Image 1 (cartoon, rainbow, N blue to C red):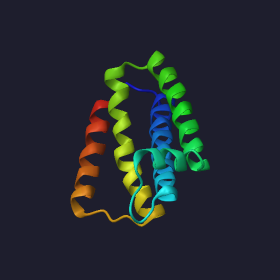
Image 2 (image 1 turned 30 degrees about the horizontal axis):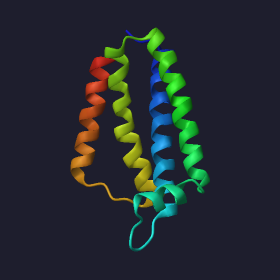
Image 3 (image 1 turned 135 degrees about the horizontal axis):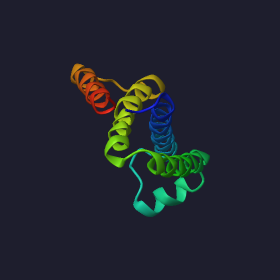
Length: 121
């Protein structure tokens, strides 16, 4: 059974991964153009966007946290908690970017939470 501190670590990791995804989305929105960019133009424009560096920093921090977690929790228990990011990212994308979520998303959210709670027992 996981301790409260271990659960906090796993949830924090999921939030860090989610924050990284939101920052990557912010980067993508910052470099987008009407006709689209080719790969080279996209890379060059992205290199000038501070959001990209923030996203990379958050992902690096999340990786360090993940290594710490894996030293203490079996991968078979820890990994399913990363599915929390599948809940967190769309909810915050809805709040921050105005994206829409349909009813099937909310059903999936409940199923993901149910699965994580069963594994975390």
